[in-house]
Image 1 (cartoon, each protein chain N blue to C red):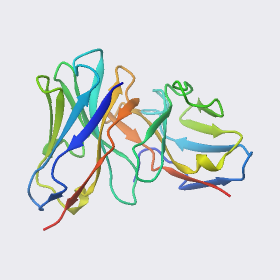
Image 2 (cartoon, chains in turn red, purple):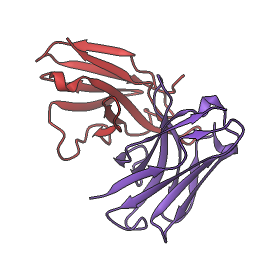
Image 3 (cartoon, one colour):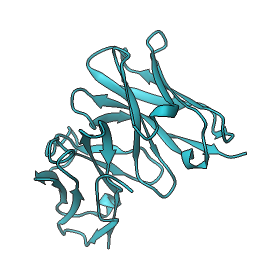
Amino acid sequence: QSVLTQPPSASGTPGQRVTISCSGSSSNIGDNTVTWYQQFPGTAPKLLISRTNQRPSGVPDRFSGSKSGTSASLAISGLQSADEADYYCATWDDSPNAVVFGGGTKLTVL
Amino acid sequence: QVQLQESGPGLVKPSQALSLTCTVSGGPITSGSYYWSWIRRPAGKGLEWIGRVYTSGSTSYNPSLKSRLTISLDTSKNQFSLKLSSVTAADTAVYYCAREQWPSAGVFDYWGQGTLVTVSS
């Protein structure tokens, strides 16, 4: 069972906006920035959002991150079939002093 | 361009030790302020942080694995390594090495391709 809680699945149609939630606690999301990763089958995760809402170079501005209290969200606008992947949130947890991940959300583009 | 590559046995017997090495290319492993980390993904499950070594050689480990875990740095070979003792089937996973930004914990900007390690007799 993961420290951070994500919905196991999400879906949308091309062009839609979808959001993926990540719920934590005061010792992790509540006190630290959040990172999001995108992973396709058979490949390594790719850094998508860092420091809660910063996009690395090359990541389209269709992807955005936010945080409120002990929860964070990843929003994907203008959904494309190429966005079909697993998405993970991550952050530092002050107790027990470890990086923690969400369980992952499988995004399906209908 | 930084690149990471995992290497090591793909099959380990139960109760034995799992040893993996990550070779870093594209720059000295001691350059800049980074952690060098290990992460794994068991089949059908999510990502799990294993631990990290800083460029100074200091380490941080996942508490759930700490008693069995050693991560070390070999600057002469531009490599860092993972050793997990007394493995069981629960340690079967794809193991990734990654560069983690300091002090931004949890921000892994470069990853290896991953290597599958199966624990089985």
